[in-house]
Image 1 (spheres, helix red, strand yellow):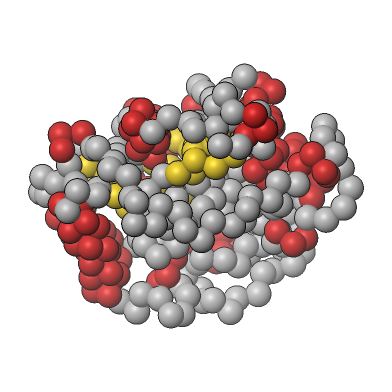
Image 2 (cartoon, helix red, strand yellow):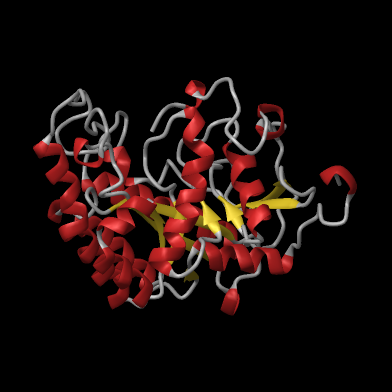
Length: 335
């Protein structure tokens, strides 16, 4: 993908730049000490969501018409330079490990423990592997949007969102109710919300937000109502095996995740249940040496009666059912 600061100038098609630029005011307080009580099913004390970023087939590749190959989140090393003008077979096959092996290892694990997860699925990646897509659906897992592909120019962003929606409907039977970009531009939030509003589709939540351990409402750029933010996590993300400072070992990763579980469970038992995201990539955590760590984590959580493992859609609906949109019916989207 291109960086957010590369999105400058011009119009993207349907709306002007002024209509699309949507800058949320910064909120340093959040809930503060007035943390709302998040009532979870069965009196559980912590909601845990596993996210599998399914990207294999949506990365940069000359095989898909790109000018250069991929260089991010792979086994070859953090300093890798992308191949320009030629195929990068080591990189391509490193990604293919995720779709050929890693995704099945993870699906088997979660389904063994009757856990439903959220797929941050790149639309183009789903198109490349319809067998895996069918398995995700058959397993009852949520498919949320991670864009149609992982590369776009400024003028193509609106097209990519529309193409993505059409692609998800074609491969999964419906448009995703949740959206995660990963590297949004200043116009992404407004484009997604406006296109969903135009098409009459449900945009239940967005997740390009890392600010809290609970969902929260913010003004929607589309209709004067609210847009629910279900926070994602860089802290509990397996990509930290590939960045410094990160997880230097599977033991460090496992200890970090279980430490977060312990902290949030303590708060839940004190009357303030929270949510927690554990972010995965099939080509990374699906490797045999790392897999034992996530296996241990899943086994531990499956045996904990205070933990509710849920999809992001389930968490969003649980929250919205208790704390409805505070902006609905207000003028200009203000409280």
